[in-house]
Image (tube, rainbow, N blue to C red; front, side, top):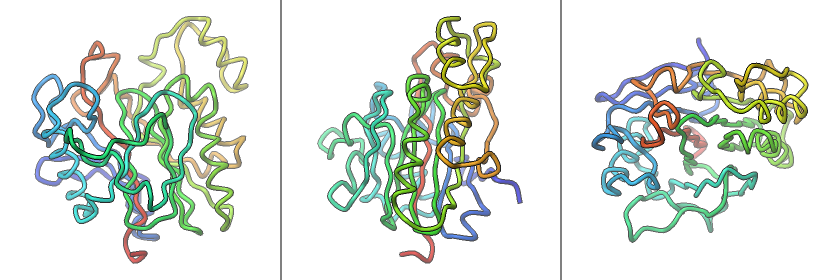
Length: 272
C-alpha cells in the first residue's frame, strides 16, 4: 500500500496515510483545495480563518473535511493554533481542547503564537494551515502520541521539526516516531536570496550552496534525522504546491492572496 492514498468524498479531496490508519486507528491527512464553499480567491476548501475569507465558509469547510475523514462527531474537539513562523510547541491537554476549532467570530480563539501542536488525547483532531510551508505530522504509535508541525523557512531553519520530535520522545513508549511530510513548495519553485541559501547550507550539511533555490524538505529531513527519526521513517507526499495550484493553495504562486489547506491528525479508531 502506498504511504498516502488520495480520497475524494463528495468532491472534496484529501490524502490519508491509509496503512497507518488501518494498523493503528490514527488519522493523518492532508487536504486539497477543492470541495468547499469559499469563493475566489479562496476557492474552495479554504480552512484558514486568518486570510480574509468569510468565517462561516471556513467553518463549513472544516466541518466538511472532518466529516469526509469520519471525524465529524469530533467537531467540538478540533484544536488549532495561531501560527507565527516560530518554534513554540504546545501540548494540547483537556484545557486546550477545542481552541480555535470553530472559525466564527464569537468562537473560542486559537492557541496563540504556536507552530506545532502535540497530544496524547484520543478523539482530539489537531489541525494547522499551509500554503507552501512544510506540513509535518509526527506519530508515535506506541504511546500513542501525535504532533502537527508548521515549518516555513524560519521554522525549518530554527529546527521546529526536531523540537517537536523531541517532545514526542519525552512521552515515553518505544522509539517508533514516524514523520509524514505533506505537500509544500519544492526547490523547483522556491527562489530565495543567496544569503538565505547560505544560512541553510551553514546549518544543514545536506544543503549545498545553490543558485538561489531552497530545498525546505531536505532541511526538515536532516533536522528529523538529528532528532532520531531516520530517513526510512520519513514518509513524503512529494507534490509541489506552487506547481499544482489546481490542487493546493500557494502563497507564492498566487501572489499572497489565497486560502490555506491543512494537515490534520487524530488518535482515532479503537482508541476511543
